[in-house]
Length: 152
Image (tube, rainbow, N blue to C red; front, side, top):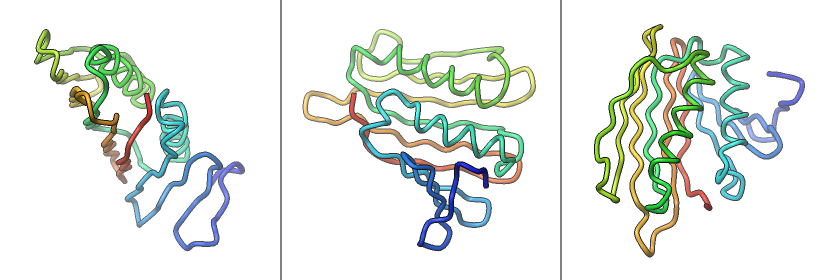
């Protein structure tokens, strides 16, 4: 635990102010308030702290399923790849994209020279849907999960 994280009154919960990290052995579930997920900065900060504190070991695989407005599909994929590069500590080596031009979804598989990989699928929210994120980052010693809605 860093100086910025403090134990919450509930067992197994560390409070980082804008985000909560639920711990169970080496399995983390992130609870980031919906209002701050739109730009992903709070989510990214909590994940980066877990990496720096070596709670995950070496990050190995990122899986993200996200729903965003149809006009943001490509931007959202690029944002998730940038987060993967930050979390894995290097630039992606190869990218393969599916669903280009569908306006409904994009899926991208990415691989890094150091062996890490990502599978990211972003789909359209439709006219009545709200943006959402389902994230899993697997490390050599633990896993981080986040599931919830996001406001664009």
